[in-house]
Image 1 (cartoon, one colour):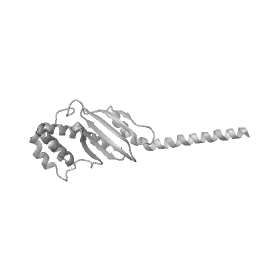
Image 2 (cartoon, helix red, strand yellow; image 1 turned 135 degrees about the horizontal axis):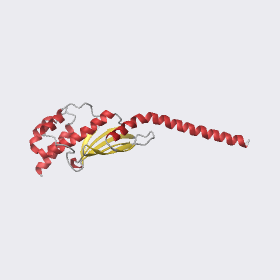
Image 3 (cartoon, helix red, strand yellow; image 1 turned 90 degrees about the vertical axis):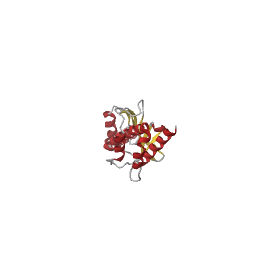
Image 4 (cartoon, one colour; image 1 turned 120 degrees about the horizontal axis):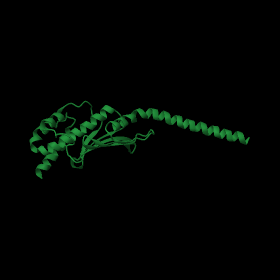
Amino acid sequence: MAISIVLFIIVSLGSLIALILYSNKQEQKVQSPYKNVWRRLANRYNLFDFIPNDALPIGYLMGKYRGYRLGLNMGREGFQTVTRLTISVDDKPTGEGQPPSKEEIVEQLSEEMPYSLRGDIYFKEKGMTIVYEQSGEEYDEKYLQFLFDLLCDTLAGYHQSIKIGSEIVPALTRLATVENKRSPLIHQWLYAIGEQGRA
């Protein structure tokens, strides 16, 4: 009798462990294609990554991208998941390469974007950091790549337009229309140029 009870307990525990392992494996199968997108980006650009193996949509990438500090993270805030990308100036305000000309800045701000933004973009730390923030999880590799470059180009254009000063104001003012999805950023540029002129 005692042997059959012990045997029953062992079999039950074995079945429970097997069920938990199977469940975790299925969960990872569902999650891994998404998490692999972030890992591919991390590998492509030599970014440090922390992406847990469980089903929680929490993780981050960080490192250097085009001469800027990049941070991409996803986590829970309250009851919702938030995806946030930050691009920050390191040593050089325009990242790697030549700073954009006035014409390049205007062209960049007036061209149609290949994607509709799924979140908001804003500047922090007196324009030293640009932030993209959206509710929910983001695993679209092409969209994330687009955001990396959009934020770098925008930060470079912002710093160069501050240097150019009042000469670029009329062109920026013409672009700051309701139809232009970058209008909130352009208003921040105009404000920063005005502040610099008063200093």
